[in-house]
Image (tube, rainbow, N blue to C red):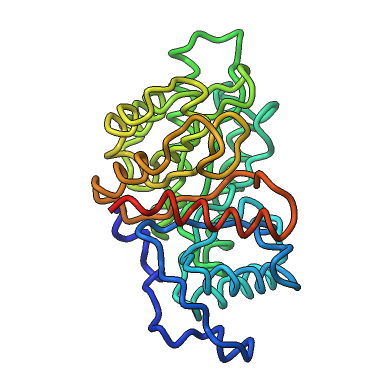
Length: 299
């Protein structure tokens, strides 16, 4: 499964497409050992223009993927334009968020038919977004804890809703990735082992785990063991150091060691750079690239 996530992410030859498009020599930055995916705004001070120009810039700095949480909210024309550029450069599209009406009132843990209807509508929309941008991974957060229901009933409600969702996504090879979060204690899904149990119960190649290392570190710690325990259900990783949710090297997490561990496990998918930047402006963006070069130097 993880091998398939890089379909469309094959590396181009050293004769960069960007050199021709920008009328500039191609940067000689080599691709990283792992496939880190940046997001819109991450290089906004380093290059003029929209996300397309940032994608070109990132490619010439050795990045081979993006992620775009807000892809579903872009116009179809924008989605297609981004997808076309990724295909041209041989880059992979990471996650986009499935529109399910928010995390609070529309929780799947409640088992309400109207909530499930919104979620399934989001699944149908994700199929169309995927066709345009080339993305095969869509993030799902089940929503808030439903306090008037027992835990087991809530878990069953989530499983049944997700089973309906994969019926829509699976024929198109799209994977919903469940993301445990630390943003608020009200959230139903908060740990990788909880997500692991749900994925095993849904029992579909289209329901896997988004292992956001920032959130897991905050909620449980013991990060490498949690990676090992959940690994066979993980389809995507996200990065962020704690505290601060910035790039590697800015917090307590030893990302060089974590990246080495993920690499040695044979992971071939995208690792989304879902975090802020420690310093402002162009200097901060160049330091961000340097931080990834240092953390990626694990061989």
